[in-house]
Length: 445
Length: 132
Image (tube, rainbow over all chains, first blue to last red; front, side, top):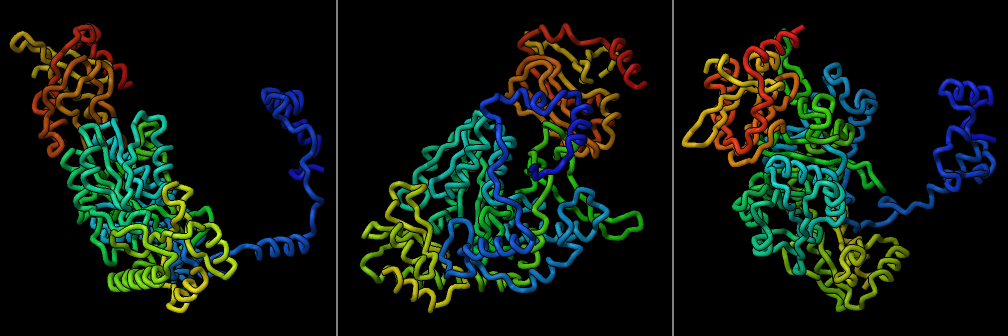
């Protein structure tokens, strides 16, 4: 029995309308060996009650940050989400609207985007922000494309191995057909050495991407890296951790021309496979190369404040194939959540949250390395994440035992860094208590 | 410059060719017809000095409140100057399109493209057809 139901009369009518004699004729261009010549092997249909019970049982198999103590990081973090974020973002006016496709009729939505942009520019110390992108990795790749088109340098883009490996993969994918080399600089000491950048950068380098703090949690000498890039006429792209800016210098203040981030940490939970939230801000001189939507503030003919989408000539619906990017939407709901979160915390709350992450992660690092089995893999200062080397070299077994004991203890690094296959990445957010940290040490040492 | 003495491309650029010390230098701009069709201009991205351009390739962009339009190089050669005062004074493009509104100067390296350009009368005819 077909699951997508239409009668043989329906099928005949549709075939007649498009001028095909039969369904097999319609699919004739698909090679015979690639066609399924039997019905799908699906179980019999369940009743609604049976299906609800079945799905509930499947969902109960999930192990998540709500059911285990979570020390996972590497781009996605278990930060606290105040109840007011759900309360405001859950309002029907916000929750059901998606992105401003018919923008000016939805002034409330545009005002949120405008306020979001204002907060992101203050957070990053840069002049302009777009209305958000899809997530951190593709935001980084869009920033590289921006740098290439604004510098008109098609030689290479430089990234350190300390940039998130999945961001590097995303950038590589975006560059596949552009003939621009993606040069990866090794970072054996856990940080991007300025002299290694100086040796790699040349007059055909469009940009360098610096993650701050980097994938290993280490703080880079970002200002020195930016200076070297600028001296060679290349742009500096910062991939930053939004919460770290409660303590660290803002990207615009240390010389970044474009700043991108994964923004889910501001008010949106960890989710397997997303959706997540991409931040992007830049200097005003680059605004015409920036992808995505931008909300602007103006006055209507009665002189009242109102909001519009602005600089749309960059975008696909006007500029067609010469648009700055194929991004023509934004991550409206999560940008709203980040706006509420940032407005709620304010600069003081951001500083306090960042400080809690720092203090707790230092405590965790000290407690773990009290055991002979563990040492810190790198000497560089860290923020909320650090890399632990297991001297016993049994990372998989350790993580699996920790899971049984109720902990997501960390992210194994061998998958991306063969030289670090005895290492794992531990993230400690403001949510982790002393008791949880002590229990983790007990469970895995 | 007197527009009647200029050469024109189908894509609405004007060209004035002068012999400077044995080199053929083309001064290039947008025609009055094109500037008026674009309406309110908000931005221009000038070509970089030193860039090698081929005739009919896009080498500059002008943005109005409604659209972004390419400006095509009417000749083949090397950009030796760009009118750096234009981005801050976009009204010059409409006030004096054939004078202060010049966009770039190109040292011609291949004469071939010049033969494709129209004289003023032919260009006037094209504009008359396009405005209908």
